Length: 76
Image 1 (cartoon, rainbow, N blue to C red):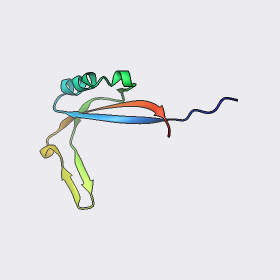
Image 2 (tube, rainbow, N blue to C red):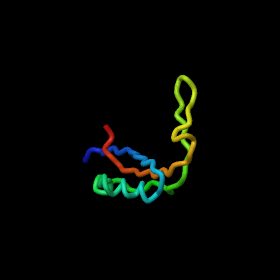
Image 3 (cartoon, one colour):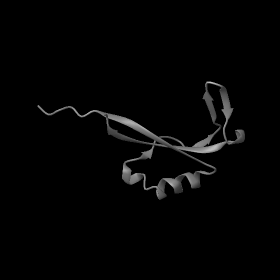
Image 4 (cartoon, helix red, strand yellow):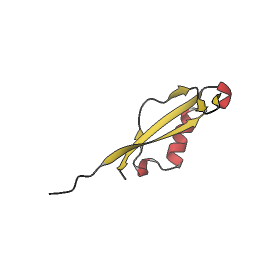
């Protein structure tokens, strides 16, 4: 009987001013060869960082492009 291999999904999000810059970063970091693929639509987002002292708007509240990629890795 062969052992069961357990996998989990791993995500990486690139935040950039434009979709072109986000995809250029994907290419320059050679993420495809590391098993990453686009996980959904690329779009403009606003970001808030939430912590013990409340929340703060990131990037001066201006929208930035977020491109999320995922890959399957062996669970540890």
